[in-house]
Length: 594
Ligand code: O2Y
Ligand code: MN
Image 1 (cartoon, rainbow, N blue to C red):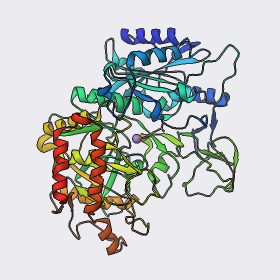
Image 2: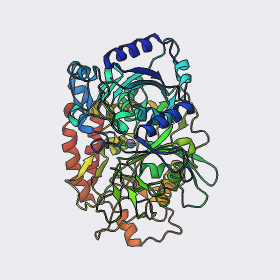
Image 3: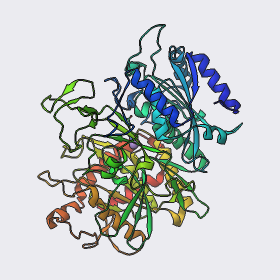
Image 4: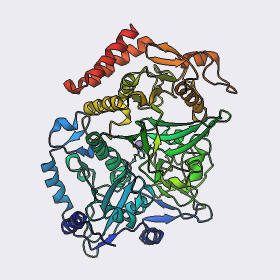
């Protein structure tokens, strides 16, 4: 395969000259290519083929123990001006960073194959989609990109002679000398890892890590950090949101996009099986939403990805049966445990396991005193295999969003559900989103991580400008702006019990949101937003103590005031750049709280 695109040929030649690989291969996205690379990695000791009868066409990888997650402290936004990256991003001068990284990249692919992966984020040719080209020396990245994006010749055809693409350069940062044997998971030491974004050039450079968001550059790097900067320039939205369709018993469809920080059950909600009779839920995406205003003035969303890169521990037939069925075959597992039968296992899978090989490759039993799977162990699995995927999840036009949901993990203060008074108030709610960093924490304060719109690690520019962009989008959407809600599934009683059962029962809360949007129920106005009137939340068949329900819905004004102090300290970091409309919202809330 090769390309007619002159800019692409020139870039590939330039990277080849710098990285000096032994050979160059263009990824064509075919099954034959996937099978060949998997075979190569099994033979090289990097991958284990799972028992084909239990988990057909699936593979287990073990990473280097030092390379197990996204590295936020090595992730950079290299804009020309520091203030354009803002106080919540790591900033380096782009010229300086390019110099440092060019030195690292020089000769970094010696002894390795350089793969050129043409990929589309979103259905090829959709007006919302974008083309990326990832150059990598990791065959693990190639096979994961096959699942997570649309790879291959069709992308190059669509690109044509002068189509635009986002260049994404990746190396594991481990050149091989003549005759040097490879290791199962090559990577560089932490101080040499760089996950770099050059937003003014739509350029991504990643060095030293082979793991997840650091290496599969279509995901967090392109679809969020770079896309968020493009979206702002071009007047659309790139958000850290799941997308789902809820269908009422009468057949009315509602489309919801929801942003939660990690560890709040985003993938579980995206694949929800409602408990309320007659309601149905279909998945469109579990992590990222790209949204544009359509010809009718509504906001249309696509899932730019083609697979799910989910956290394995905690995933079970109880917590997420649809994910469990999705990953029954054709899946890649990273840092899970390997059972005697040749299947994968992890903590919270709710299946017994007496003997396994743990994620580090050592024998493991329940008495080993350590986890068998790394807490950030992952599955990579095709979205099309999800039993509840929407029939039209790849519709290039996207789906019209009716509802935005924000939330976080809060053991206190924040009630189960609140509706914003209007879109500006919704932007304020998204901005105030925060999560406790441990589920065990009972007191609010120290361990609260502010994570506006769940975008803190993923916004490619100054977050104050991001809030201004949300206000601007709201102005353009006007009466078509989605309704906005804030949820907290994680409130506990004073004696530490969960007040809300969560999981499938969350459908009850979504039903109330849909009824509000349809104008079927009124709401009770409180200082923090509209809440369900007594009896409006469908609790039929649910055994919930009335006192627990009252506590779950309690608006603790004193705790909210304390929260405001914390929020003001957070906003102060952004100085004058904070939009006046956001400050107005804060003042209005203070007045309402009295
Ligand atoms: O640890 C990683 O590299 C992956 S992080 C991730 C993966 C899938 C979906 N979301 C996330 C996240 O951190 O938000
Ligand atoms: Mn995510």
